[in-house]
Image 1 (cartoon, rainbow over the protein chains, first blue to last red):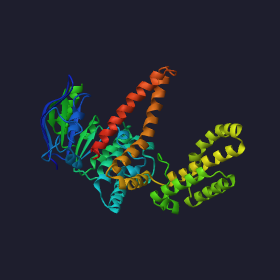
Image 2: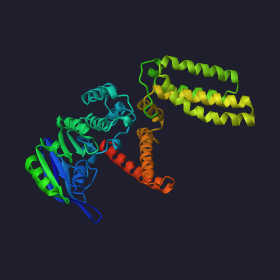
Image 3: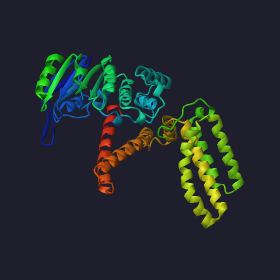
Image 4: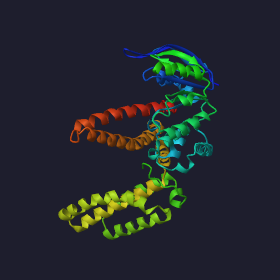
Amino acid sequence: MSRIEFDRVSHDFGAEQIVDGVSLTLTEHRVGIVGANGSGKSTLARMINGLVTPKSGRVEVDGLDVARRGREVRRRVGFVFTNADNQIVMPTVREDVAFTLRRHKLPAEDAAARVEATLERFGLTALADRPAHRLSGGQKQLLALASVLVADPALVVADEPTTLLDARNARLVSEHFAALEQQLVVVSHQLELLDEFDRVIVMEAGRVVADDAPGPALATYRALIG
Amino acid sequence: MIGVYHPGDSLVHRTPALVKLGLLAAAVTVVALQGSLIALGIAAVATALLFLPARLPPAAVWGQIAPVLWLLVFAVPVQWLFAGWEAAATMGLRLVIAVALAALYTLTTPVTATLDAMQMLLRPFRRWIDADRVGLALALAIRCVPLLAEIVREVLEARKARGAEGSVVALAVPVIVRALQTADHLGEALIARGFDD
């Protein structure tokens, strides 16, 4: 498992303090982050692959400073966004999965084999030549996950990956996340997704207010939100 | 090009995109320079015959060619009025043949193959032009069409729901704001997928 270190990390958007002096070391297989809107959980997750650079403090992944060696970190860290529409770049499903590998300079046959295996794994083979923007919400999120995993990252960070989905699609996407071998950091409002996780961090006003196994951490969160 | 590709294993599908692009450019140039109605008629038949081996669904072909026919409904009578029936027929035939050939290309060629072909074309100029970047820009431009169409559709609905159907401001402001937000998110997604240079 990768070692993710947050060392006295703070971030603000002008007068608004978003993350306030957070220090954490994450080495578990599955880590959940929960918190109300504006609690700083998404900003914290985005710091892991350098989408947000903290105003102070340091974030490291396997000893690599994310601020200075972001490109190396992003090769190890895949990121799944809330809205899959913002993540899909190419017109068809197969082309979007293949797009991730364009920067990996693999031999064409190896790249094609990896794309087909990934499509198969996520049940997208039958949709491979369909326009990506015409898929259902759940299918789009599976495509977004497939497009990340085709590069075989060591760690996957997901920012509310089921928020825009209906209950059935949210369950389908959650099952795929639960089956991942990769280390996983998930920001989620869907608390049942985190029940089987190894560790859950609760954020409130930019600070960590609970950091525990899912049971006690989620109980703290439920008490917080009333 | 937005998801109109129809997979297949015909000779037309298997012909490399670069060869198809070259043939398309040559054929459209010849058609544009051709003034004889008989020659254009032969070209039209030849174009129709090219569709046969590709075994494309007629509805998909019609979907690509039909929009230009609407244009011709207005353009041909005007041309007839001012330049005579021969000029009108020549213009109409040229346009239909060019659009049909372009449709044959887009229906049988995936976008990635087009991007690879563009990059190959630009390779001799790599000292001055970053072919990867041009390819990515093309892919993004193609991707943004349905994204923007969806934004406009949603904003039009919201405008209607608020009873502001005639207001240009109620359309333009949210569309521009959401388009900029979408561009921002797309940029983040590209960085996350390793396209951060």
